Length: 106
Image 1 (cartoon, rainbow, N blue to C red):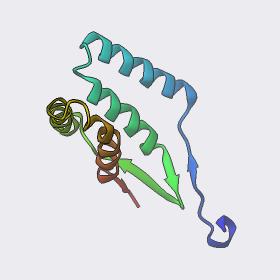
Image 2: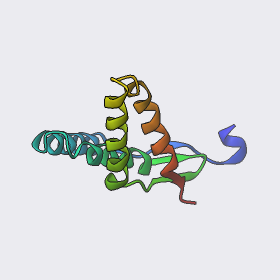
Image 3: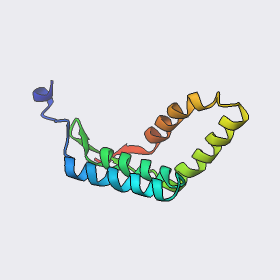
């Protein structure tokens, strides 16, 4: 199917870069006692998406840590109010937020 349309899908990120971003995200999260965890998530997810090309179209992540932080607080409060029940939906909400902030450049 790729050959028929002449478009390719690939990932052009490198291992050392992933390791570096992951270590930086871990250090920032630990040093801020988890407060900057949304920044770490957006940084690493943005790296993955920005190095992905699907069907010849490069993807771009334009989400921000500030935008995620607001949702993160809301999800935390809902989890506390529902005695942890809402926490089962947090991962799905996070994936939804990622998808809403991902687009194709070309």
